[in-house]
Length: 180
Figure 1 (cartoon, rainbow, N blue to C red):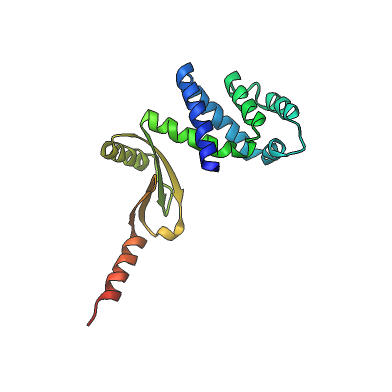
Figure 2: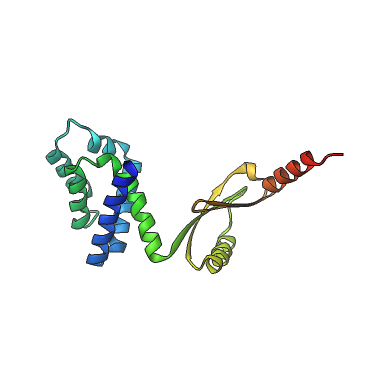
């Protein structure tokens, strides 16, 4: 049910962004709101508190975000408040981002490595993946000391394991299955 609600609201916002030619602005506004909610979790607590009236929440949203985001985004937040969907905001934002990325032909990729990748290696990986996938790549590098070496790529729901640890584990399976 939550996924359905998030999808509907995200799609409605996406369609409004297309119609008003404000997709990029909506994406940036959502990023500002999500960042603010991440930095100040008590804002989410206030917005989802059942004893705070809708009008108080709307005033609060207007005071907090009024100068940071466009009026259409404030109006969207008002609709969420009116429909008591405040707790779905983060998932609505995630679904909007998926729709935006699909529309703009962008692919989110996480590269997990043992040490931080330098800018040159990241750029090279972006170009290689971009050419293979025929998409613009948004690359995020995450460091995991357990990797040993190489890179583990998370691309949507796929994992490409090019790590030394992964190779050692597959060799171990082969060795265990060999009968003498």
